[in-house]
Image (cartoon, rainbow, N blue to C red; front, side, top):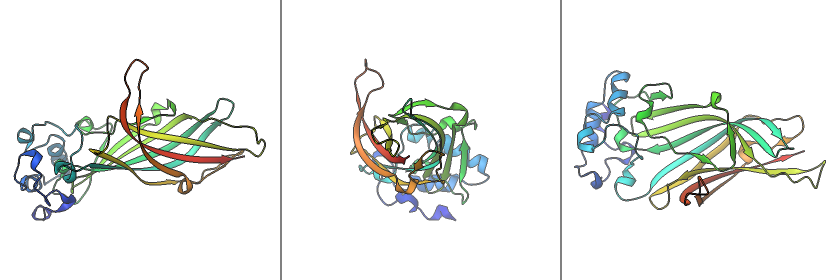
Length: 256
C-alpha cells in the first residue's frame, strides 16, 4: 500500500535532521495510521504513535514540511474565491465581501496511510488539535460571525488544505471627483503576523470569483484582481510594538 512509498510530499527525500530521527520515522506513521477514518483522524490529531518522541500531543503548532525540517523555508499558499459583494456603502467608504480562503501547506507529521482525505470542521471535537493560520486582514472592520466556516481537508501525503469562509466589511477610500463615471480601487491585505522570511514564504495560488454583479457598479471579476506579495509590519495596538509579517494583497476595481 501507500506505506511502502515514503516519497509523498518529499518527507522521506532527505534526512529531516532537526527532529533527531532516522528518515524512516515518516514510514512509521504510514504503517500505523491506517484503518477506519475516525481512528486515523484521532491518530493524526494526537501525533500518535510518535507523540512522545516528537514531543507534541497535537498538531496545533506551526507546520513542518520536509523543506522546513531540512533548514529551508516553510511554504504556505493561499487562494481566494469571491462569491459576491453584498454591500457597497460609498457614503461610509466601506465594502462587504463574501469570500472563501483556501490555504495550502505541507506538514510531514500529518502523513497517514489512507486514500480518502480526512475532513475536520470547526464543530469537530478534534478541530482545536490542528494549526490554523493566524490571519489578520488589515482593512477589515467587521466580520459576520454567523457566516464564518472553517474546515481542514487533510491528505495522506502530509498536506493540509484549510478552507475558511467569511463575510467581511473592509475599508475602501472612495474618490468621487469623476462622478458619475468614477472608478474606485479597493484592496484586502491578508497578513500573518509573526511569520517572516526566510523561515516562511507566503504566496498567492490564484484568485477566482462567481459573477460579481451590482445595480450601480461594474465589478472586476476575480480572475482580473491584482495579486501582490510583500513583507510588512503589523501592529495590533498602539501600545504594542509592531511585528514582522508576510502579506498577500488582493486589489480590485469597481466602475460606476
